[in-house]
Image 1 (tube, rainbow, N blue to C red):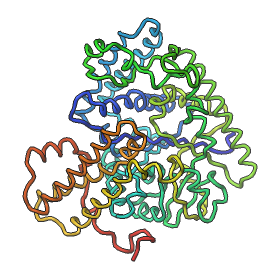
Image 2 (cartoon, helix red, strand yellow):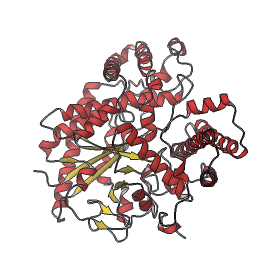
Image 3 (cartoon, one colour):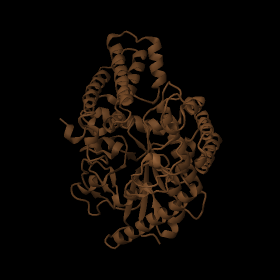
Length: 531
């Protein structure tokens, strides 16, 4: 008999990586996540839902930029050839990796069959799982903008939220009540903007609740209600550490697949060239195992799928026992059923931790016997339960717990650019436009501004990985934004070929409404920004 609940929350997100360049690195990011994460996740949930002995429940955030990619027929038409290219490359794997290569070959073929069976359209499958009560689908800010750094113009935050909710409803059929805040980042008064957009719940890192005023009676083990009427759940670090930490958790086990060693680095350049790969880069073809912590890449041993599968079963059992013990201890001290909230990036399951989807499948399979009941956030709020009213604390789940990772010496320059462009957008919208063509230019300017605000590019600048790409994306979208605003100001149309190229490349969010940037009336502004 379950004495509490475990709420797994996955946040599925990619920046808008659609590229006009076939075979680009950005396109690889999407296809690898599709093959390693999104397709396996759907297969796990559908199989668990079909088993009467299981009761899978999951809160899943699908970011609007990811939805735009998943619903792009032209982009998804290229996925099967991408898979076939990798199937061809696997034939070049060394003989000592034959077992791992055969296993990956079968997985790639299953992904192809699964993708073709739904005509490359995954969204109806997510919708069905929500209709069946398995999924609670929530949204995110439109382009994953880091909202505390956009607060200088609350209209920019509102545009991120409204655009997201409109797109979610357009593509998934229901207006979401829940929101994954990008990077779980919160600032004072954000709940008022969220409530004004019709949002009713979200989640924060643990200290967002533990430092709330007043301090919540139940800590992170029950949701709180912010003054504007939005409920917030808190991350339980004890439930998340074993899953996400490569150094202290399961993904670092020596039997699991190594993320960093890839055939894209190991195969001869001639073999890559014969398959149409023009430059060395990770290809998602990983055939080695972690082996040991600190083991050099060149010493990694061949991956053994059967050994890894056995380890998944053991780790799922250990994880569930830990949650059952935790819930039992909490139930002895609380006058209500305790709730453990375990949020993760969805891409952890399959992409970063290859065995992650199998681990989820084992959790759902073993959960009933372990006495762990799964739930999702919307289901929790549907129960008759009074929530304590608290003011959440500014916070994020990034390194350091606050905003440092997105505002530091590597990327702080972009914050001023966002602020300047946001203020210009508000002024332009307040003044209006004089023609249908200018209205279209203004809408495209809104898309470019949203795309420039993606927190992913700031993250990459700080991480120091593909920094040239991130910097180019920011400058490209801001340049397009200012050119479009200048065209409206001067009344001279931008070059037709340039405009067509921009609209084709950045044609997401067809439901975007530039009026979302109109100045907020004082009564709708967050309390700290009211006159």
